[in-house]
Image 1 (tube, rainbow, N blue to C red):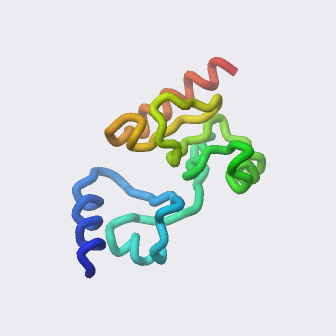
Image 2: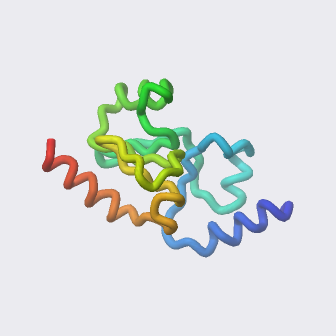
Image 3: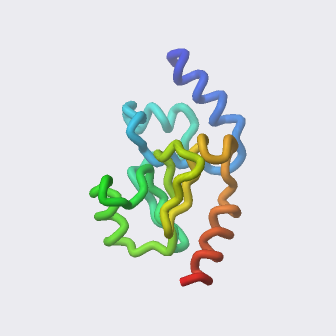
Length: 120
């Protein structure tokens, strides 16, 4: 293992739960590199319980995210990529480190999704 993979393996190994990497614009290694570093799977996006997990939000600046959004019709889009603490997008939940300075628990995302459903 190279030093970068060893460092990632330590971080990933210390985190509880199952880990899926939603590939982002800085994730250039082959999928197997990330799996060997401790992720259970690697995907460009995933859809679960009405939530679309994708790196970039579904806005006009991200046509691929919009295509997936239209195909899946999610209740909420869970994304990263936006590093601003203040920028919010209706129907989206930004889990980027820069927003919370902590890992966001899936239950927090599900709670936001339930609140969003009640508003619609």
